Image (cartoon, rainbow, N blue to C red; front, side, top):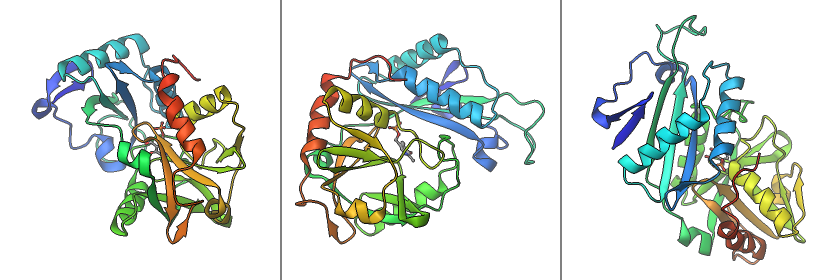
Length: 282
Ligand code: PLP
């Protein structure tokens, strides 16, 4: 694997990350995952905008040169012969002796490399089982931060009990999002999802679904819903860069709808590629 290390291309073995990179001790950094279809980035500018948002909110001083980064990442695709897949980009606050305060002088560490990704066709076709999990994460889930321990624990719990995704709920049984996905319910044709605030990551796929809903004349409601509403919904589905849209047909013991992927999730999946030449959402 060839890695982009700052603005250089190096072999994975030569990408030497310092032991005191703040990503290691503190998870002090942010990241993005961008999907590549047929050699082209999908919604590249929206991902870069969110990366800038995360950097800003985390107060990591790093000016992204969009054009230059895009060219480097396209070169990275070429060097790794990626035509369909994904790219992972990580920016940490940099290297400094371990101490909590932001270092006075540190240069953010930038790395990017391809991650193998293929469309989860079986899950999209047949739906998945999910499990509920208390949202044990912090209150700044809007930042795409490297601190993913809560997400990792939730996902492993889901797999351990034979489910594919964990769906988080917070106080008052409010459903927030999945361990690595956004969550949607459908009732009488109305799509509903948690508002984009500090309790969820505002998924780029979530925004794309909002756009598709508009194209398809499907009402889209950004409003909190409860665990009870989740279980009683006509349809449930999740979304992410790598999942696209995946129907959820069972949550713990509760079968959703008739236990089969619902029509709205199918409609969105069908529309996914019809509209995917769109350049920018935000
Ligand atoms: N929510 C969380 C916690 C995530 O980790 C992710 C993506 O990995 C998403 C939502 C979906 O975001 P996107 O559609 O931008 O991939």
